[in-house]
Image (cartoon, rainbow, N blue to C red; front, side):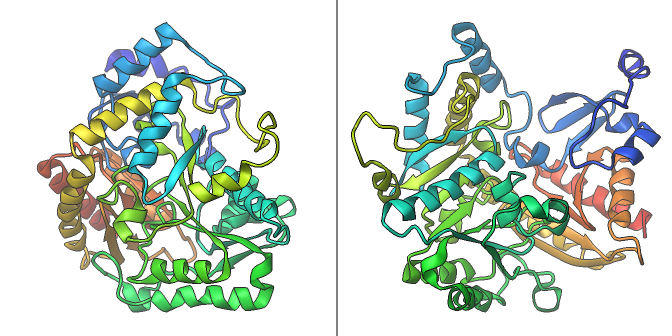
Length: 447
């Protein structure tokens, strides 16, 4: 403990511009309990030596917990063999094997995999594929992207254009893609507060897509992109029948449906993808995070066979899609992904998440009568507890709760005044119980 503190006591906080962080607040308080120096199992270790239960699996990415030796060993072996292999005009065997494995897990004929380095890159890639697909089919007028209010699709230009979180958009309005529009969000405290699983109310909200088709004409719309479950805005769960209606309307009008599964992919929803968990097959799926347990940055897009085929035109020696990244399919990321998929399959992780999610559901809904709790919602192994904001100070109550929970040994994730929970699959029943009771105590402490 002494060594950890001394190693951080002389830190210069100023040069680092921290992402999605209140930089002035953080650097003013210099919180040692928010400096993490280790990660193992379901816990982080702070610079003071305190153990913090990781209630959101890193940032939704470390679904298997931290430091699994099977993943670490795979990365160590790979770096000794080849630290980098380009992906342009040449390829690594393990990349082809990984794409085959992912395609096998995806629904129906989504069987073509394009690797990126993050969810943000995956989203921008999927949007480019969608627009290019229509152009190649002689429908170049289909350029419009339809997103959803409160949606989060990363921080690329395409992602913030299709996304619907105001704070992510307002500063960058001049840079955003022209011709985007948005469906209404599906969260209604009046009609669905304290729902267990999918709310019964709200499927009709998908009909708003018909209104946008009437407004813009289907011939101008390339794709609709939604998260099956909206994680970053605080676990907003799709109403029963909502995603099915979106699928029907997109099919009717020749619009591609993209599921942003950066959070919901690889087991969290109790199945391999949210598409299978909710029983709806999109045309494109974006993924990242849990594909390799967050060990090395990685993401990708899974496309239907027909979409891939549309690009396979012209001479065989011609490049079909002028798009890619230096680190697409980075060898270390691929090695981590193979090891992660081995574990996901061998340990039946999707089924284990489903079971863990049932305990989490019971736990979070026991908080509904606690002070200032205005909603509790859950699906798969993810949940959120929403608090009433302090008058004139939205978000401050959640910050205070976050800081109180740190003192009690739990690292929470907040967005606005909602606390999101998505613990790693290795969490024990006792740890989930402790998580809930810690949250209960912190809710009361900041009341």
